[in-house]
Length: 120
Image (tube, rainbow, N blue to C red; front, top):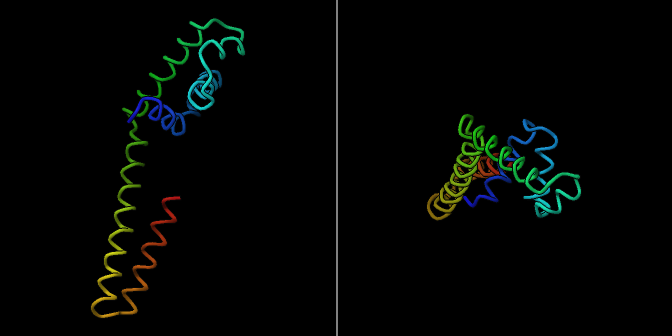
């Protein structure tokens, strides 16, 4: 995963565990695409101060993910649900080609609906 994307995802998962300042700096830098100088000017601190705060916050996010693995497990679940949807499609297609069981069709529709709901 690219670092910018990784930090943005980790900020979504663990951002509430950071201080308001850390969360703001990361959001400005990664989500609003502001430079260190722009953030420093807006916040009234030095560019180095912003950089240090961002680096510390990034390290905290990575440390939290290494311990809790919420983002990794979320990705695995999303991949698994997508695979379930694909398999339900395969079963539905097979059913249409061979026996056309109404029950099997209804079950595959329900499986896909629940999986898609969980993906949201």
